[in-house]
Amino acid sequence: QGGFASLLQPGVRRILFVCCTLQAFQQLCGVNAIVYFTPQILAGCGVVKLFEGWGVSALHAPMYATILAYLPKIPTAFLTGYLIDRLGRRQLLMLFTPLLALTLAALTLSFGGTSIFSAAVATTAVMLFGVFFGLSLGPLPNIVASELYPTHARSAGVAASTGVQFACNAFVVAAFPIFRSALGEQATLASFAALSTLAWLFVIRFIPETKGQTLEAISSSAGKDKAPKD
Image (cartoon, rainbow, N blue to C red):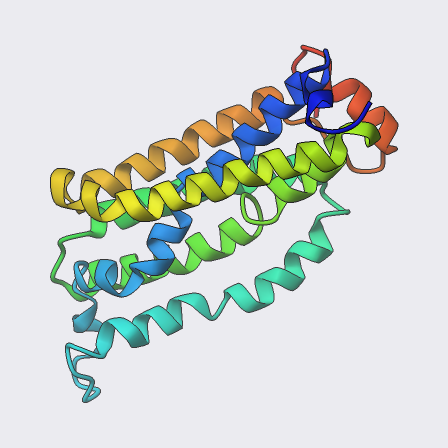
């Protein structure tokens, strides 16, 4: 039996939990808050210092730094396509999710700085954040969800986990300005770093490797309550 009722079947419930949680972590690492507010974040890290002597105004410097920070995301898409079937989904998540957390920690520590060094660290952190996200929590939750569910529950399962992703995206984007005002920029960014670390621990415990396996074998093993093996 298909449809959303199939998600309540034994085994499928565990897959639903894994996929929905991974999709939630995709957004709770703060990716869209950082993307939408990059100029303001970089301005708070003293990025104007990077463009002193180049005739760039304080108004335009954060925008130029944002463009510079996101240029590497373009080749990252091709690199992900190359690595995903060579290293595997789990290995990419294991390798790059903790690096994602480290870039957020670096961005947190550089916020409020007024030196060229803090501005360079912040810009580099945003740049690497985009790269590491594109190699891990960006594309892989969707791919993992499409592979873990058994055939009869795949459409409903992917729809449910994608719905969680959209809901978390809306929450983070709406809540970021509120948390930034109430807690401060550094505390908010630090919470994203902590959630990225939790995402890495979740991957270690729950995400199996799906590379080179049939969909039937993947869904059968994913529904069992045991830690995956590398």
